[in-house]
Length: 262
Image (cartoon, rainbow, N blue to C red; front, side):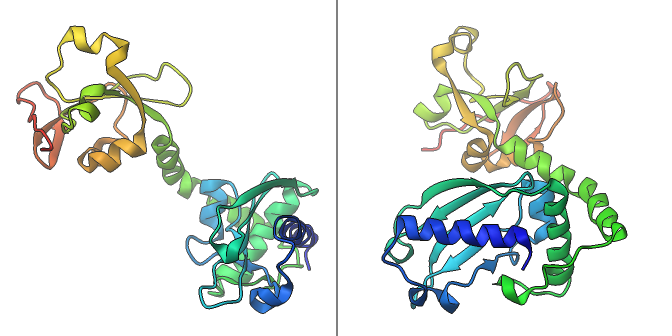
């Protein structure tokens, strides 16, 4: 087995013994097999968008078949291990490790998993059932790396959703719909540049920092999904709500549709 996976296996089992010492291999699916969970997004997506492999899992061997140990291996060698007690029903406990290999070796393993699992449509399988101990040739590596550009738009969007937006407190406290948004050049780290408000706040209100809140962009979209169409708009863009379910770029020729959620 690949030396990276040997280390990963050790850390996953060590974590299990440390956090839930009463669990034996007989309590686990396939006597504690580690499964490569590539069935949701695939190796390339996770590698280029989230900087890690698909998750590795050990499962409990009962009717619910919940996770016992989850491991996330990053492309820099960082390994996050989560242990779930009570047959998977407890909150996970996290342990941090480092896989001692060169980053090129991690890339080799990613390309190997893509070739021997994803391309063969082998999904969420025991790692011992996937060929993982051969090195891909340079052509395969170059082809894999060349796909990075295809994932940049997705990566940028996910990053944007984790950034913050300034939101008028009236939106939350008064339970109003967002009626106006303006995106400016960010002024701080993790800032999306977005400002959102109901649309009828006066200058005195918005100039008072106590009337403003920081929200995650994703939280804005969960509350007002109609904004989603414009969330990646360039700096300098202003948008207004023109109907209960519709925003437009503000051309200064329409009134803001202002509505209470009731």
